[in-house]
Picture (cartoon, each protein chain N blue to C red):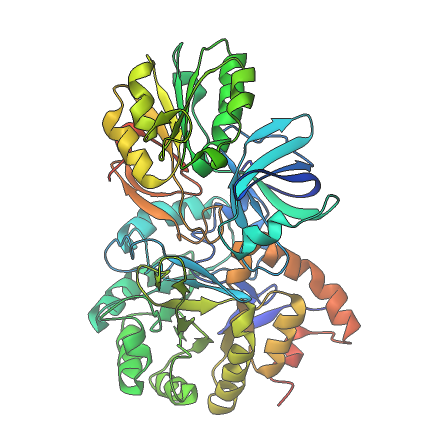
Length: 245
Length: 303
């Protein structure tokens, strides 16, 4: 919990960027937030916080992107600019950028796309040449294709229904890319497919229903080859060699 | 200057606030964010004879003003707790800690309690006979007065430290269970453990928890917990550690008025990691507001 901070953020903008998908920019203390970590946000009227991955940090602004999947995120989508939010930051282990090699591959699926953005930015800043595969269900769910391109990354988009880009899953775009290492975030079946398809080492960001988000409740435990881990504290990023499916 | 000291089964503690088992790990991780020596004590993660992973995930579900958990007593087992967890805690916590023990047979309870009883750091042993998330143990001891008494007797026979039996609210008459454990020498009781409950996902049309049912905690259960503390206070003479949805100094005082000597705080720690520190810091102001000089003096004061 060393890097965890409990501070108040102010909502600057909150806008729909794709089907059921919203982008919020929050202003507050973003110091010590690492790439691949998540924040845990208290929403009025709900008991548990909402864990959401960090999409970007710039100056004192934090960008998050979330999908409306339940009552909590529905309320979030309706929040107005100026809303003050109680946020726990600095949660989770984050990605290890030092392992990326010269040409890392970033694979994001749906709500797993956002953490790839800050990662991509950081890798570009380090002089790396990342390729990005973004997977969505359909054309109307796509977001951030242009944002990734602007960072200088080579971007491939897949859609399950073939309405845009390569038809199929993220793994159907793998053959187009040479990569030294990979980072991925998305639904578990996608992670498993990436695990099976990949030919290098890599890191996977997992999702699980959480109680606290900082390692206290053991709600999100999983078994790994390196022993039991808490997705929220010892993860959400696990390395390829430790994962047990 | 208000007095928050209370005496719990012969050990004086600075204040009645005790993070509840399963919401505070083995303490040392919380020491990274505040000085845990401010606490009265804390009850460490439920420990069993053998290591346990617990139940499959998802094991958390949200509820109106609360949450369900079906963790199922994940812990490294008593030997590792003694060899690895307690030494880490000793570096950051200089008060007696409350050990929390669970089991699946009477012999399990006795075995684990006997081992922990020998540890200098342990002040009290809280014996959980009320976990709703394990099969063939836990709550099945706590829902039957004879079984509850038998566990108490077995544990008392092999220990020297105060034994606090943790009771379940999932019974018709909690006072009857409390009397049964008191008659076998329990030094205190703690209540309530979580209430059995469930939720179903409308999208998946299946229970959210893989274990189907889980234990309900959080502010939603506070009135139930308060009623149980009230009833047990009328039934037994041993001290009561009250818990269930306590989130503020006001809640703690209300529960002490119902009869609790000390207060455990559970779910609140998971939503606000600083919850216990905030409660302790606010006692002075809240006690002044309600003209309370000493917390010890208000125990059972509403009866």
